[in-house]
Length: 225
Length: 212
Image (cartoon, rainbow over all chains, first blue to last red):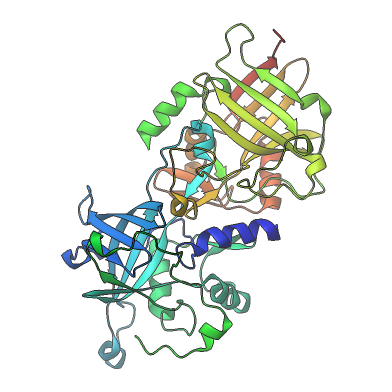
């Protein structure tokens, strides 16, 4: 099982740390559409291209690293703490922005029985900044695993082949994000992508992605919100 | 989803026209798996005009490809199952025969994730990281002279779990059921409902493929 776990994490590391969820982070009420997200983003080594999606408030995202692509339906999710009522906390209350990534259906030549055995899952990226820079953080599975060891009921999940799969409802997911988004190390080191034109992307770029933080990175103080 | 299901019904004649229910967890532990050589070989639904084939091999006889998922912990008790439909579209799985209180079940799990090696037209490695391989289950009523297998069916299970939501731990993701029950819970459930057509309604009757 360890080998299989390794494979999963290796694959997952290609798009940063990855905690899969069966359910989305949004209902229609939390969806927002920001035109600033549209266009190409890159860091010289990878390119993320957002286009307006077919469904209302959706984006189509194509990621490209060294010709290795990913195609996703993405939603921009704005969640706000409506669970706490007291005024002191109200002052500190702020909206959180996330990207909810969901893979496009594979266009495989394999038969449908095989395709049915591949369960698509949601992944959430926290947006720290959306301007000329897109600054994002992915959830760190190792940190979440630690937290769940101490408090298994923290959020509904299953451990599949040593990998956490969130099974919490959308409402539970939102509540968890609001309560724990600032927990040290829960979200990995930020990745910064700049708005780019296609011509700005190098023809031969090396492999680099949002990173899963190791212990050293976890220990480093993040100053961003 | 409905369109997808319809397409699947058209293609899945040999699977008893079922959309199987997916589970995050397997039906077996190492203690429950058995290996029966009789299952080895190629099976078809109709020997004269097969809609597809089921080929069971020993995992040990099937070379592990670089892009495949790691072999099961007990490869000597696992099968490699290659399913092909009449259009030639394939699916590759690890299969385990599971014996529970004298009843036989089959647990099927993809042996590889989609990749360029599997399908040269595709290069969407990132999508792969967002797919979780699921398990599906069937009851095996006999292996010889006919291989009789009854699969779960998503629509029937949906009806059943709407009536009895606590019968088995699950999540409803859009209109798709994903079982989240533990292996132990799954085993108790399949034993209780092995003969219940609501849970295992989709029968496939297969015979050995004759050599040409």
